[in-house]
Image 1 (cartoon, rainbow, N blue to C red):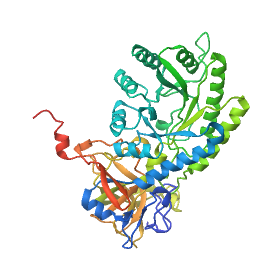
Image 2 (cartoon, helix red, strand yellow):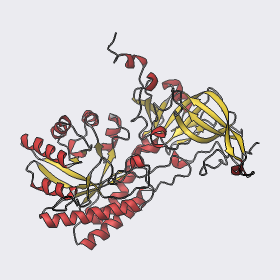
Image 3 (cartoon, rainbow, N blue to C red):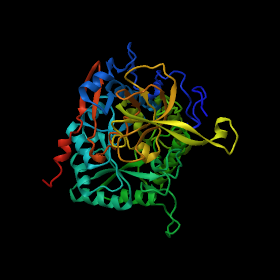
Image 4 (tube, rainbow, N blue to C red):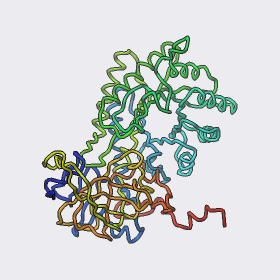
Length: 490
């Protein structure tokens, strides 16, 4: 039994439609300067992908510097405009964990953003890039003493404390140095984020933050969050700046952000009154989603900013308090869509898969088989672990040329010795895709290179930045010699 291209494959997920034009680019998934040139080849700021492959090889992360800077400015401008009458503007923190190198730190600083780090290694990158410590934050649920000392050495603008034990440790270290650590308390407001379980971070049953729920086993019945506020306010080694929350990542619905903002503002007002303190700052986190597939609907920065400002404005008026200085962490929304990964196609294989005939309009109960094509590329889970970690969906296009061939449901897979080594689970690609063709997978700027590994002893790819028609390496790709140099057995 066959299925026409127009109808699509019964093996495809419900959300995946057959593209009207396989050569077209769904713009929200790509950097603004990515297009097809006159020869039909994918290009970035005028540079064809074949030229990038010739110079740097594949796999390769290809990033638009201009697009990164434009997205950073868009968040900064939108939030500063929306909050100008509330608290004079907003501090926007770029999430270093999504993708970090010294070039990116410099772009962040030049565009007026601050930097969020989550480890001593990320602090080392920030230090090497020369960004002022006052513009850097340190996160993490298990900071080492060495990381706390490094944060104090660098004069960090904030250390985001994640637990009562850590609060005491940070305070004691700072006090022993004759200093005060600038601290924000990370709270878990109990808000459910509509995202993958592993990247929803504001519910109670997970490792991050101080719970705002009252402790019914404690005689005083106060929450861990309140206990931390009281302890921080009294500790001579702590300067309590304010509160922080982060409800998750890759979120499109606005309700969770609004509810978290309301809960934190009410808590902040209550704590200021109860303990006669002022907490001048409030970080509302981020986690705004990007388009990985054509059905993803990211919200523009200005829309997010306007909605958040309305909630903060009305809640502060209701509580009768001055608004604290607001900060946000857009996360992947800045870097995610700036980058695509370029691969070369190798082996192709088509298998037959059972599916209920009813899904193709046939008689229920009679299974039939349909073709699924496996398109193997020269990378995989070592350069994009998100599909295997989070069941993340991606898309892909034929990049080295256009094609008039019919669409065929395909699964783009890597070269690792794992059946779960899937780059793009379901995508329609032209039937004539062949070995030697180039594929491009958009939306790989965030959490791809950052999560990359050397599984099966594959060398991690390089990262190329393109600006004004010129490409340059900002992270060198590894070589086999790099890998062998760490092997101390010979």
